Image (tube, rainbow, N blue to C red; front, side):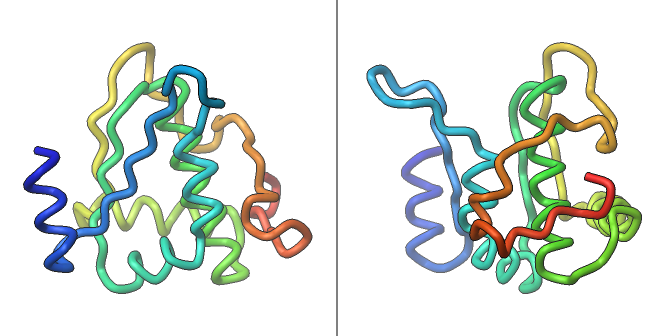
Length: 131
């Protein structure tokens, strides 16, 4: 669907954030770090009604991506971990946070491995309370 997605992106219908993590000869890039690096743009898209589609490993990547989105929420709103959990649950209920995940077992959002929140702007990074 590469060509179709490119066409849709040119029309402004979608914004594709594809992160290949295994490019030979290049350092690994993790999608959760890319989300944090682009937190302002990510938040703007979410606020505009974006639908998020996460596809990948259920036991490692998916929980880390969930945590990144919750950290973006906390950074942008100043709210708590509990608020972030509710927000993500609401996005799921509204079919705006979709996952196609496999491998291992899906970890709950509160058991997500940590990641580098410095990507959100160094000292300005505000992870959720209790994170």
